[in-house]
Amino acid sequence: MKSKTAILSVFLLSGLLASCSSTSYRSLDTIKSSGTLSISTNAEFPPFESVSNGKIVGVDADIITSYAESIGVSADIQDMDFDAALTSVSTYKVDVAIAGITENDERKETMDFSDSYFSANQVAIVPTSSTYASLTSADDIVNALNKSGLKIGVQSGTTGESFVDDSLSKATCVGFTNGALACQSLTNGQIDAVVIDLEPAKLYCKSFTTLSYLDSILTEEEYAIAIAKGNDSLVESINSFIKTIKENGTLASILNTYFGE
Image (cartoon, rainbow, N blue to C red):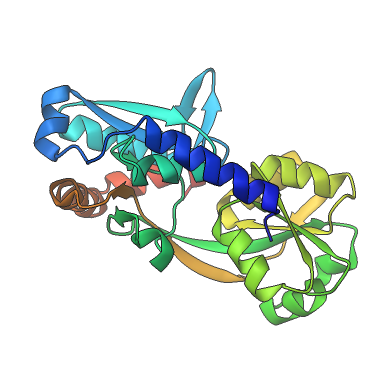
């Protein structure tokens, strides 16, 4: 679970963002007139978003930049913590957020969502030399990790955190600002495992060579673009764009760029 300090920090941040934000969304026509689509992300989640040579790159960056181009505007992508990226949408500070975001009932109370553009899976990362590395089913993983005294790392505010809180409740959930820090902590022996999305897990295990991800899927989810609440014209436009890039092969091309065939 998040500490009270962490929860208070998010609350204070939400208040700060709200104080400097608009009280309403910008319609599609307004966005087009302004020439800029404002976007929040958390560029610590490769291959969906990361920083390379001072530029935000990745699957999500390519998708949202392509959408902005399709409506004739530039993409202003702002990097921030994951929780702040969501809060920025709900307080109308930005038009959309894209950061490997899963639609759920709690988030739908304060923001709208596009159609799904990617199906994601949560997996566990463990030390290759540990007994956990031989686990072969989701049930075995849950039974092995759901024990008092174990520490499971997650990226704060993500589905991985929710899964650990709900399904590994006997263990201690340890939040990190990004997956790389969680994997570094696992390498250092400070935690026992990491739960995170499959595609980032593949990349992290290439960087942290003493770690392995387990093939068994712990939970599945759909990624969508978060959109300022009530902005129906923008939702409709983005959904039309997602449908188009699925049908014409653009989405497959973007995914292949980062994942391979």
